[in-house]
Image 1: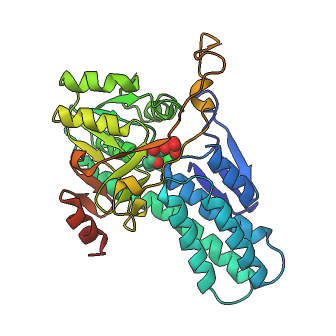
Image 2 (image 1 turned 90 degrees about the horizontal axis):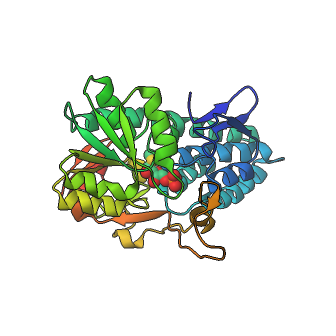
Image 3 (image 1 turned 135 degrees about the vertical axis):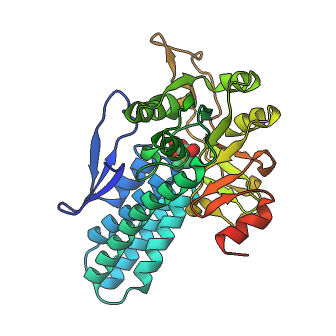
Length: 347
Ligand code: MRU
């Protein structure tokens, strides 16, 4: 089952409500682009490729919502594109998918129904391509994994974070299916706990052995020589190879580097943003402090009443800490400012 799936019979979008897992598996049906934008904002759907695909289908819903002529549909699409792109700022897949669908709409001749059909077809193409892309990255990435490896994984980058299969977790899953014995140390990933809730849930389905660790235990296991590799996803990669990913990735990369452990982001082409030269220019989402403060221990809030908090959702790992980037076009090694444009075909 896909985490983002178009229902052609009822012209609606199905998403898995990722806020409820692992306690409850529930799918929700969405009927308007406004509902899709809200689902992205509130993290019903999350993970860079998944929110890109969801936004693309959001435009298909917008085209359905629009009444009247071709011009009216195009106008609604423009409005929907603005709302969808604003839902979350860091993952470039969101703007990438929206712009891709919009440009197909603009290039389509014919009436309103032709536009609706073209928009839906392009959204479906984005979703299908995502699954194929992930399988390709998994094949490349699995060559980096040896039998017996213990791997640290951060956040959730699996089937839930994509349309299906996954990026970094997809690599781990592929190596497991190839018969390699792997153990995963799952960073719990504060504050939304995507690791403890979602990655552990996925690893249960795949039968891959794992232990959940607190984020701050990663350095301990790395320094003890208990970890052979680190695999993570990405939300945006700058032209120089700096990688924005879930908060905590930078500290993990520092600890891996200090202990000589290879650090691999797994990144589809749609996550590169070559208009951005350095990671420091990537916009970083800061979410509601309540995500940090509302955590409870034995039924009581952990923070004093009235406490304040900061809650950046992502950080930037400088390229000097990265061993190689696994992409759907092969494995890119340093110097990244030379090899990224070459592999992506922009050099
Ligand atoms: O805030 P989230 O859960 O959307 O963050 C997700 C991540 O940081 C993932 O590592 C990234 O999107 C890549 S997932 C294939």
